[in-house]
Image (tube, rainbow, N blue to C red; front, side, top):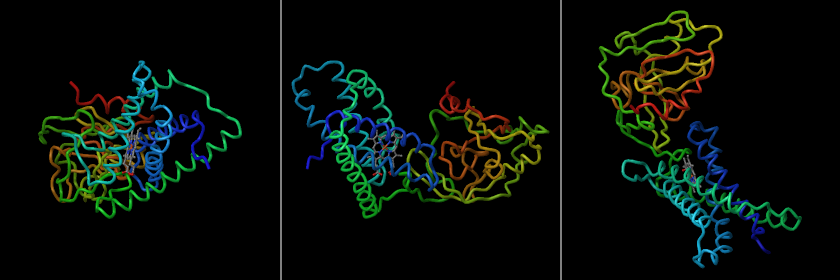
Length: 345
Ligand code: HEM
């Protein structure tokens, strides 16, 4: 029986698989709770099944590549292929191994960047070579068989990958993050994009609570009573996780002091760098603003004097060096710009 779908449906299969990989890859940046583990499962199955489609595709076009009279379109096609293969290799190597770095950048970040870069040559490739697929009954039957093979290879490969990781002792969390042991402040001091403020003088630092509240409040370091604790897992998108006991003040206490307006729905946490992230009000009430981790005072690199602890969120949402809390009646769409621009002078 012929397993390979018709040529145009191999091409469409590649496009759909890469689109799924990009969508689930980007979604993974926000998925930290086990109920969202399926996002990573779909990513892995699409990633491990993709080489089957690429094999069929390359078998068909290899003659054209060898002939050598490359157009700009061929360069885009080959670039898309090379980047996709590089993303595949780094994704699998990360998932199978105990984690690797390229200079200061973790292998998982390198993988994500390679994956995102695929978009550029892929769009050029589509603009040059777009074809509508065959839709007759024979094509549909062959595509169903071919796509089933791809899915079966993806599922079996993902299962085998997890077994191998377990055998090597390198199995990470479902997010792909690897465990970091140690105590207290002993975990990587990662920051999203460019945040790198000078150490903060606790006697000059203040925390303000403002926005949709009855009273605007200002606290000094000594006014923030670190009476609340939480054990929470910090899972960074760069590929590591650490579980620690965090101590500080629950945001709800500060909000009660300030008196939240009836129509308030969100709370924005802003760093001294201008970096900010927003939580829905109910979630924010329970979220800790930590002064200590594992019994130690937070170090500068981990956000001293105050860092948001947001269980179930990825690390980049755990705002460091918090200096302002704003209670809002509307979501804060500007945060999507702030997280990329904060830290640049
Ligand atoms: C063409 C693009 C891409 C390809 C071919 C690809 C392929 C892969 C493969 C094969 C794995 C290993 C899966 C496993 O065994 O669990 C993987 C893991 C991963 N990828 Fe991608 N990927 C792509 C794009 C992206 C992007 C854009 C992101 C993020 C922005 C991303 C994030 C991840 C993460 C977080 C993991 C770790 C999950 C785990 O270990 O189970 N990927 N990828």
